[in-house]
Length: 478
Ligand SMILES: Nc1ncnc2c1ncn2[C@@H]1O[C@H](COP(=O)(O)OP(=O)(O)OP(=O)(O)O)[C@@H](O)[C@H]1O
Ligand SMILES: [Mg+2]
Image (cartoon, rainbow, N blue to C red):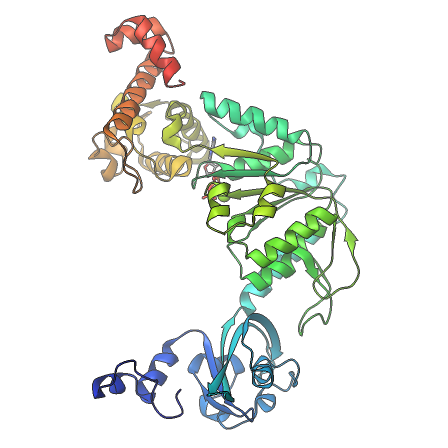
C-alpha cells in the first residue's frame, strides 16, 4: 500500500496518483486520532502515524525499523495482535489489548488488524488502535465506587439513597394512558420478570424503571444502571461480567455489574446498542442464572432482575437486527411503551405546574400562574424532546420570571413566534385529518383545563353541544 508510494487509484491518471501520494496519505493519517501502524512480514515497523507514536510514548522516527516486540516489551509472539495476523493471515477485529508503553504508562486499546497480501503471500500487517485507557479507568472507577456503596449496605436502605431515587409518586400525569402505564408498571413490580420499556427521548423511561425497582420487594437491594451505548463493546463485557487477574494483560480481579446488582435490579439502557455477540452472552446468563467473569473458570450464581429500555419499538429493533430475537423473547415478558408528550397533551398542564413548583423552591421564587396564551402555546407545540424539553423550557423561563405569572414575554423567542405547530415535530408527515384531530384534542383539553374539568362549561366555551363534547372526550381518550 504505502510501500510503493501509492495507494492504488481506481482510475489511473496523474492527478489521482498525486492526491494519493505517500506524502499526502501520511499527512492525512497524522491528523487521524486513531493510531495506525504497519509492520512488514518480519515484524519490523515500517510506518506509524502521530497518534500511534504518542500512544507508545516515543517519537515517530524512533519506532521505524524496530521490531514490534522491541517497542512493546510487555507483549510476546502470542499476545501481539500484529504478529498474530502475520502468523495466521486472518484479520482480528475490535480486540482489546493492554500494554506498558515506553514511558511506563499502562495503555488499553481496541485493535483491528488486517494482513497485507501480495497475491497469496503475506507481506505485512496494518493495525488501527483506538485508545480507551481513560474510558477504562473511569468506568472501573464507577464500578469500584458502586462496590463501595453497596458493601454492607443491603440492609440499610438509607445508604442506598441516590441510586434509584424516583418512585411512582414522582411520575406526573393523570392522562388515561399514563394511568394505565403506571398501573402496568406497578403490577410489574410485584414479580421479577424482565421488562422492556420503550419510547422516545425524554418521555420518562428512566423514571419508570427506577419507580418499578423502588416499588418492588427488591427496593432495599442494589439498583444499577448501565447505558450500553456509552462505552466500547469490549469494555462493556468486562464491566457487566467482571474480570479476573491476567485474563488479558492489565486485567484485575473486579466484580461486574451483575455481581454488584445481585438481589436487586440491573437496568440496561439502550440495549439495542449492545453488540449481538454480547447479547448472546447476556441471554446465556439469564437462562443459566450464573455468570462467569471474563477469563475465569469459576461461576457465580446471580439473582438479578433485568429491566431494559430503548428508544425504538423492540419489534423494529429485532427486524433491523439490532436486537437478537431469542433475547427479545426472554426480555419481553412485559413491555411498556411510554408515549410522546403530544400523545398525552392533557398532562402538559400538570407537568408545567409541577416543574414550576420544583423551580420555585430551587430558585426561591413564587410563580403560581401561567398566562393563558403561554399554556395555549404549550398545548399546541410539538415537543420533540418530550417531558425533558418541557422541563428545560420551564427551567429557563423560571430563571427570568420576575412576577408571579409566566407570560409570553418570558418564553424563548422560538416559542414566542410560535403559532399552532400541532404534530409537525421530527420529520414525520401526518395527514390533515391527524393534525386536525390533534388540534381539536388540544383545544378541548385547554377548554377543560380552564373550567377545571366541568364538561358543561367547557362545551359552552367551545360553543358545541354537551353530548358532542362528551363523545369527543371519549374518542380522544381525554
Ligand atoms: N411524567 C413525568 N413526571 C415528572 N418528570 C418527568 C416525567 N417524565 C419525564 N420527566 C423528567 O424528564 C427528564 C427525562 O426523563 P427520563 O430521563 O426518565 O427520560 P428517558 O425516557 O429515559 O429519556 P432518554 O431516552 O433521553 O434517556 C427527567 O428529568 C425526568 O425527571
Ligand atoms: Mg433514559
